[in-house]
Length: 271
Length: 286
Picture 1 (cartoon, helix red, strand yellow):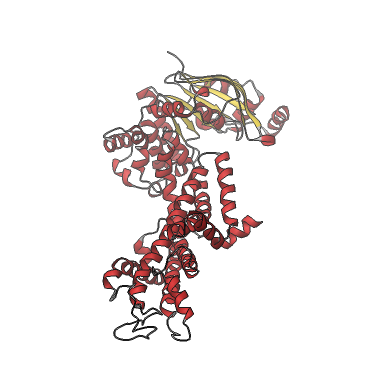
Picture 2: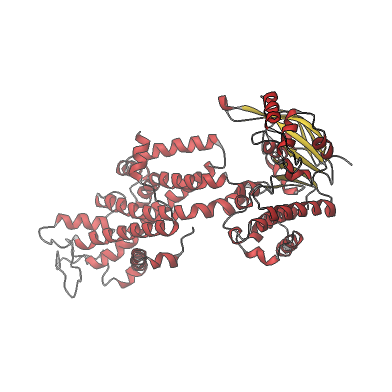
């Protein structure tokens, strides 16, 4: 089966004129159907830029970006809109309070992609999508401000799932949630993968939150993938100093943690 | 927050302003049927008469009934102000919305055009337009509409800018929605309160400009009655009939006051601010 995501030697720059700088350099990444790949890195490492590049939101300088068999990097205008309308790739934002229109009832936001396609029976499909993510369909009439953070993020997942995508790009989907909502949302994403065979690219700065759900992990540092492999291997035997620092900084992964001198030595190597 | 009529009417100033404007609008519509005389009919036997049971507001220098002329003039004056407002609304709001969506070149070009409009003086531009296109109220108000459009442009752009960069707009774009869908669904409703405030304020200022132009005889052909034209005629005979300018002047003042009162109330209930044309001009001059 072909890969859902196949990124080769990707380079992306953002900004204009003197402020322009290279965010991603020579990135290679693959995501297979039914696989959850964690993309880990600190703030500013280029995680979101990489995810946005998969949707054609950034112009690429070099390399190829193939998503569900389509070369996204070369799409423009109507061809890009048609690729997005097909709905085979969906994006889940970090903060659902910002990604859902505050003046629209949840049902309108969830069914928006169907409305754009001119589909019929939208109300029933919205109700079905909400129930599939464990929400009461009556919540369709509520505004985002009238439900809890966990319910908002579930509604955002329902919005993403309503087009029956093959790939979900989850940009820190649990970082704005409390501990119980976080667990529930992670379980929901795992269930969607198991039941529907969706591939997930799970972006996070927190190794601890992705270790339990991912099959593979790619570590992004200063715009480069510095380490990639099976989750158990990357966490159990990190080879790059930055990965070791991440593993050591996640108390849930290493109860003993790294002592201060070892962390300082690793930081010195990275500087 | 989107302003609702009920929340406007809960404010005393808003309720008075809306009531007055509705009254003036109704008079403008049914005025010709209410008028006791033909507003153009001259009566050489009743020149410059004061108020009487036959002529409630008196007569002018040609013996025409002032009340009938005032009612007929309401329609022309209000329609002219409305035309200027609508022209300004369309010419300002559409490029204002598109400027946040179509990229930097369109934004730069429209900003420069709007800056150029702001520097033009209303009366001189209106006179130039009527000289170019013909002396009619439509032409004069087209000129006024063009010159009030920067207020709409800036307000729309300022309100649309943060919305266009929001995540829910990006989420909508990721559904493959065309630009018009995203603008209509997500951006326009957020911009509407600010545009409503600007429209109310602009209608008031347009009415002042209409009255100024017709006072000077620009954009109107005698004997058609307008509030500004009646004011000009009555001032010529101020010594014979000192109270004659009161009715048209009061109508202009009260209607403009009601527009401004409505704009203030809309601003208060929706939490937006109307732009100041004086500040716009100062900014463009700087």
